[in-house]
Image 1 (cartoon, rainbow, N blue to C red):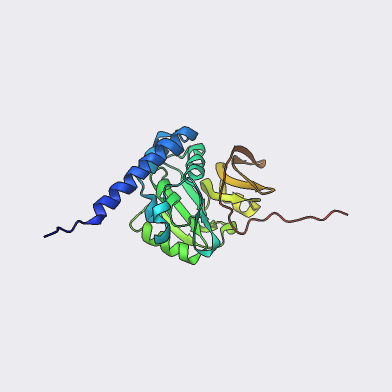
Image 2: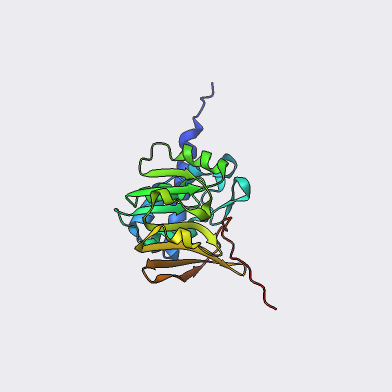
Length: 226
């Protein structure tokens, strides 16, 4: 008589092996070197924050399709954003583009509190399930480019995706001296960039060319020349 085998432990072991391979081959070799970020990514099951049909691809170094025409950022892009953010345990963070909640779950292990903003209803539902019981994360739904003024001011703004420009109204939600990490898109090329809000203004400095998901709603106004 054949004995039935519960596939769940085997599946969990397979995902854990892929997760540690991701850390070793994708992250550590590409300057994701903050020990707290590496530890968080090594123990957070990324597959839990993806639609069922994408779970098997959770640890590939690529963008993954999501509902609403969106794409999930790669582990490398998210890992570098968090590394360059130098997240502090006392930080109050605004995360733009929460998707299924993966970056919010990582930030919950690094920061004091997180407001995770997502506008796509199907992704909000996915994140709500994946983040259930995570007391440090407030998941909110609204337009990404508007931010979440109700939770401002923030010590740190992280945009987990690429944008053409960050609206002034969004930057205004960051404390003077606060940090901003984002992807940027310029003529079809995506990069990661970091900046700091000061009383005198705000600017970004690119630090890595990398494939990065482009978020909706952040187009630069086009000007015409004659």
